[in-house]
Length: 293
Image (cartoon, rainbow, N blue to C red; front, top):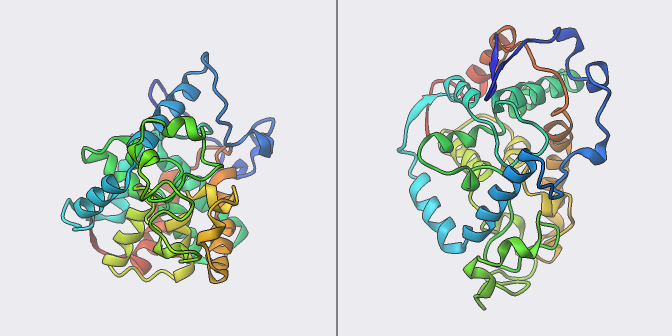
């Protein structure tokens, strides 16, 4: 299978070399991932900055409520999980500084590294494959800034570790709304992560889609999907005043998954056609048939 990029077609790499970056490239150090420094001469960094600034300017409590009212009716389209995944061949994530390839490549990169390290946990392989599937909203008139990227709670003071910091929120009206701009905002102390209203995006949407369609995935896997982009919490250490001790099990699940989501982005391109039969069997096992989105 050939994978489309914006300007070219990428030849497949020998599958025996996949998923260990040092075998394909010179290697990419951990500190080189998630580099959000501003570089006026780097078009990818400029694209990423524009995406986040627009997101942070417009992601208000009212905006999130509106998107939830729109998308959680699950009446936009019906399709199989496989066909939804194939759509991601036409999506390059505008918020991601680490990869400039279609999202379906990242899906298989993640899934196959998980499969290598956890061969007996087939549900975990499937989580790796579908974790970004909520990005299909971008094909239904949603701009990428409200589909992709890191997530954060709305309705309280912005976390210190959110990428691009306070400057990116200067045009967001909730920054100046006294109901929302304090440490607790509209929440109670230690209310728990599942009571937070997260910024709208692919994490929350896919989580809700899976619940609505009665996917047979374990709760641990659903946590991985719902909070994998909540970097200000699981990586930045923010929002501890809103979290409970019981939420630690959610964080552990997310961190277990996160290493595969992030550090496979410098790996090679999988032979997707050869891998489909295995993953179709997992889809049939855990999320069969036509799904309501």
